[in-house]
Amino acid sequence: MAKSEYVARVAVIGCGHWGKNLVRNFSELGALSAVVDPRADVAAAFAQKYDVPALRLDEVLATDSITAVVIAVPAELHAKIALEAIAAGKDVYVEKPVALNLDDANAIAQAANKAGRVLMVGHLLQYHPAFEALLASVRKGDLGTLRYAYSNRVSTGIFRVEENALWSLAPHDFSLMLALFDEEPDQVHGTGGGWVTPGIEDEYRVDMTFPSGGRAHVFASWLHPFKEQRLVVVGEKAMAVFEDTNTDKEQKLLMYRHQIDRSTGRPVPVKAAPEPIPYDMEAEPLRQECAHFLQCCDTREDPRTNAAEAQAVLRAMIMAGQA
Image (cartoon, rainbow, N blue to C red; front, top):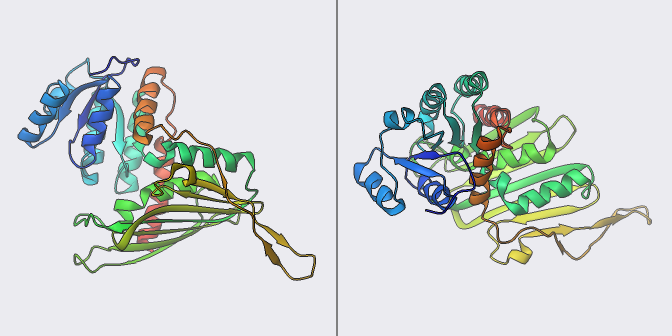
């Protein structure tokens, strides 16, 4: 394990599909102290690979040298484990969504605030260097007032049976939209369809409007012929495209300074060549996210994706699911 520049020491709870990536990153950052997984053979394998003990959750919570927990378990368990960890004096990183209902999300936030614990939610794309550059450009006014944005997060599989495409795929996109428009939507409408597993929507479409007049659209599907992760932002002065699945890093984040010529009395488009927006092409988003959590634990600063951000995302998603 690498030498750590951080004081915080973490246990990762859940070594599954996504948890294994968190284990690797916290180990490489030198902050991993233990792993937890209900499958004894899986826990033992990760413990051996990363040279840390495999513990039970209660053992982690009773170990003073472990100052934080990273929760990567099914979403229905987030609230229970997060509340237990906060009660045990641990800082908490919990994967998205923070919880499946607002009562649980509010309880986690209130408990963390009362106990003075760091609470961070894993909205990964907020830490993608390309999105960071895009958001900075929006905040500087490079695009002007935002008119609308849309995101496609589609692929073939992985087919979930415990949650639909909205809850499995779209939390990232809700988080990005709320950050771009810097406000919560006042109207959210969502609809989806399911064919693979009865009662589980394989695709979901969401429309949002914001008090400032902007609009956002999200399309999430795991029943799609190809993989695409694309975010388009249209402003009054320029447009931008963040295409995370583009393998050419130079083309992953582009600005289009198209104009509209009204001199003839009719609007005519004047197209401009796309311009790459500079960003750190070597940084790994998950590494940046994990490092941010450790930094917040050490400095006691509020994480970028904190309780308030997670609650806002959850409110919007619940509106989409009820529409």
